[in-house]
Length: 216
Image (tube, rainbow, N blue to C red):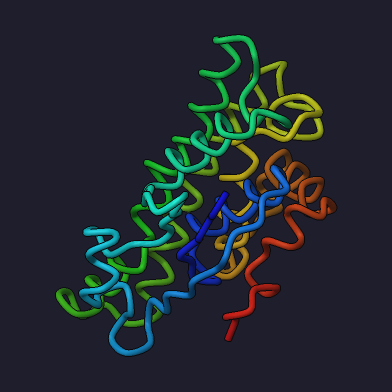
């Protein structure tokens, strides 16, 4: 089986997929796509042919490219079912997917590199304004997520009991981003505790941005 992961060390979406690969104990040849250097290597015609959105990650399995981290992670979960990243019960699967989507669809896109660059170039936002924007959407999203976790009996050491699921793969990279932009995480006790538990596991440690070969 041939796997390639087109990745960038600081990409949240690529971070999620790196964790999934580690959990599944799958080796992938990492192809580094620098999102800033050379005007953004994701905009090169050779990469756009692979992923017309010009985003990372792209997973290539036996020559076939897959994009979007949710789709990639679910594909890997079906390709190698153990250990499972989604619960067996359909209601619990919906819970995990919902938590994942709160981050992937409502928090992360508002703080993506393209959005931040647009704030600067089109609206003249300085670094301080961009930081306030970033913090605002993290706090709003995490506030809702914290309430969701606190109101349900399913969270334990992780978002779903004592089992790592897809939701944890989405949570940890977003916590990394929050810390990078100086969000006060003390207001999110459950999120912080779950992230701390995840970060003790090799799959998460090895996937961390600072441990990537292209980290700079």
